[in-house]
Image 1 (cartoon, helix red, strand yellow):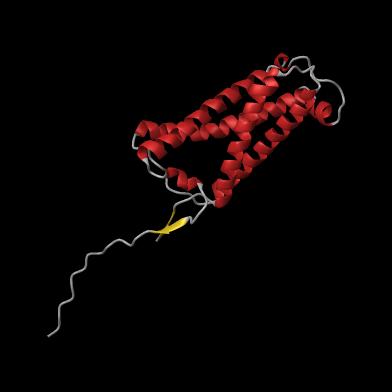
Image 2 (tube, rainbow, N blue to C red):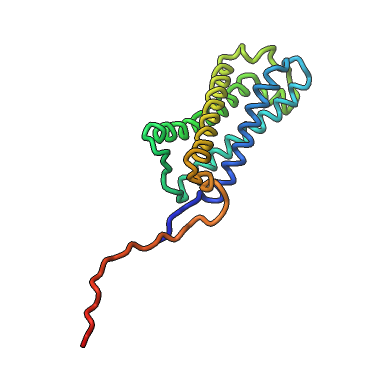
Amino acid sequence: MNIVSRYHPLLVLLHWLLAFLIIGALFFGAAIMAHTSNANPAKIEMLQKHMGAGFAILALVLVRLLVRSRTSHPAIASAGNPWLDRLAWVSHRLLYVAVLGQAGSGAIMALQTRLPQIVYEHQGTLPADFWAFPIRYAHYGFSRLLMALIALHLAGAFYHTFVLRDRLLQRMGFGRRHIQQPSPVVNRKPREVQQ
């Protein structure tokens, strides 16, 4: 009997691509864009990149959810502690909520502030401050939740890798997906020797 030992290659690709895009968008937004005035002409180009990344992340997360629902995946991993196992289950689901909330609040803020027209069609000017729009607080809140969940996700990966040493990260890598499980041994009486 074959058992699934790794995630589908498309899920693996999407996982690492999304990790790169999400961490990049969070860093760019929090460390660079948040400290650039809306009066600075460079802010338009920054917003183009940030919005493009946000829409790409949203689309890729939706594809990931679809692929995940239609492919087989390895058995649920255990950290050997029911509290840690529950935390892992909840945090993985919250990652999806946080990413979708981050992208959704960004899209709403873009529509409320007419960013598509300003950024892509060069019609109008940026508002003096995005904090004048209540949705900006939601966008900020989701970004901080996402940062905390990514830190927790990394801590879990390090725990499995360096403490448990259970090679859990191999499940999110490329390679043979199915392994042959040995057949159970059936106890049979030895045949009687005919004389």
